[in-house]
Image (tube, rainbow, N blue to C red):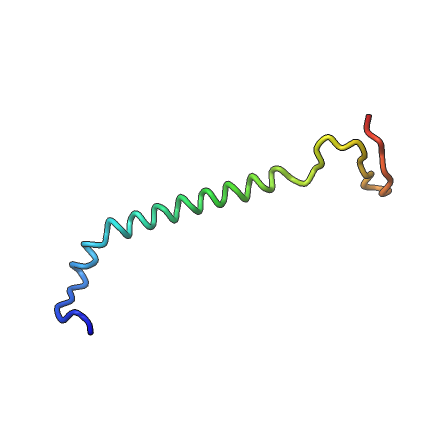
Length: 65
C-alpha cells in the first residue's frame, strides 16, 4: 500500500538537506579516492635501499655501493 496523498514537491523539499549531504559526502569520497590513486602512482615501484639493481638495457644485476 502506498500513501494516498503523496506530494512529490513537498517530499523533495523535505529531503533536500539529506540529498545535499549525500552529494557532499560522495564528492569528498571521490576526492579522497583520487588522492589515493595519485599517491599510489607517485610512490611507484622503485625499490628502496636496494643493494642490487637491474640494468634495464641488458638485464644484468648491478651492485650498488
